[in-house]
Structure formats: C-alpha cells, structure tokens
Image (cartoon, rainbow, N blue to C red; front, top):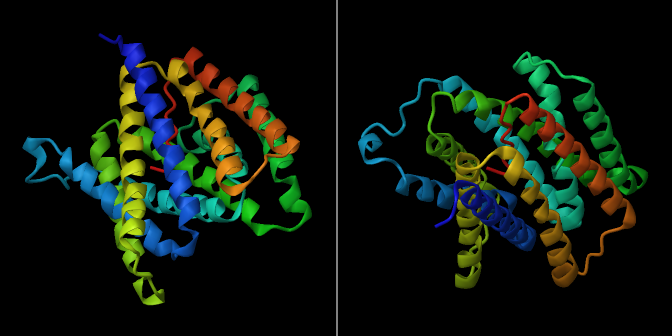
Length: 293
C-alpha cells in the first residue's frame, strides 16, 4: 500500500510523462492546421472530463458561481495553449520546455498585482535568475530575429495568469469543472477555423491526434491528484523530468542536440523556480502552476 507522498510522486511522474507525450504529438502534427490540432486537444479532453462528473452534478454540471473568472481563465489559457503549440512546431523541443519552466517566475510577479502578495528579496532574486536564464536560452533567437522564441514567453505570461485564476477558482469550484470549461472553450474556438481548411486525417493519424486530447486531459487530472496527495514542495521537482524527456525525444526523433546555452539557461530557470517554490512552502502556501491544461 502506497503512502500519500508516494501516491503524490506517482501521479506527478505520470503527469510529466503524459505532458511530454502530448508535446511529442504536437510537434509531430506540424502537417495539420493548428486549429484542427486544438480541436482534438479540446474535444477529446472534454470527453474525459465528462466521464468523471459526479453523479449528483450531472443535471447541472455547468453551474458555476464565478462565470467571469472562468472566462478570463479560458481566455488566457487559450493564448498560452496557442503559443506553446506554435513554439513546439517551430523550435527545438528542449528549448521550448526549458523556457516554459519560467511560468512560476511570472506567477510571482502577477501575484503582487492580482493577489496583493508581498514578494521578498529571495523571490525577487529568483525572478532575476530566471530572467537571466530565459535571455541565455533565447539569445540565438534574439540574434537571428527568430520571432518564434517569443511564443514560449507568451505561454509563460498566459500560464502565470491561469495559475492565479485557478488559485482563486479552486476555492469554490471543483477541478473537473475548471478543466471542462477550458476544454469546451478550446473546442468552440477551434471549430471557427474549419473554413481555413482542415485536412482529412488517415485512421492512424486520427488515433495519434486523439491521443493529444487524452494525454492533455489525463495529465491535468494526474497533476491535480498529485497536489491532493502530497505537498507541492515534494513533488514539484519531478516536473523537471520533462526536460530530460524533451532532450531524449528531440535527439532521437528530430536529431535535435541542445546547445550548451540551452542547458545553462535551463539550469538557471529551474533554480529560479525551485527558490520560488521553496519560499512558498516556507510561507505555508501552495503554488500549482499547470502546464498546458
């Protein structure tokens, strides 16, 4: 019988694996329109969440006390999702994953304005270290004026607000409802791109594209379960296994070798995030920064 902390570790590991596989499918899907790929992420993900609606909520599953905050969470979540999908299709996998680790840095900054939190010297130091890491990783893109390097940063900004809004929503709303609304929003927005020309996938491609929604859907559920069973400080470091998976997948599938600057920048970003999480635990708070949701 596993302890609560062991269950937390297991769910976090499964979540990281699922998110990494989702990134893999997104990068593979470059031949399909982005809107069509988003549809599979949203529609299949929504089906998963419908399956776990509690029996007593089936008749009014859509009821929420905070529709405005759900709208903002969906709006910024969509911006983040579009940005990370665009980045994954146009940049090395390890580069995108490394920069995406900077989301807690922006969450710290946003918490000052949206949650009126006080940020001490340690967290400001973490923010500076994180920004230095981002500059080191993105330096080739800045030098070559590669616009795609801005997309992982936009993802971080979007996810920073998503983290703040989920922190507020989770006080009154169940996790499945927060995720369900977002998946429905993705589906509706993606359907508006049909006139731009979707491609009829083969049976094999249809299965792979469906896996995108499955991986994304279960990854968020497992992430939530991880935080439910274990302390954030214990399981959060496992998130950085995603970089290991990104390097392995990028090297063996797309022949991508991470540069020394990417690795150095990733170390600084990870160090920055760990400092932030450490300070949050000392202040007896929980920070849950979802990946793609």
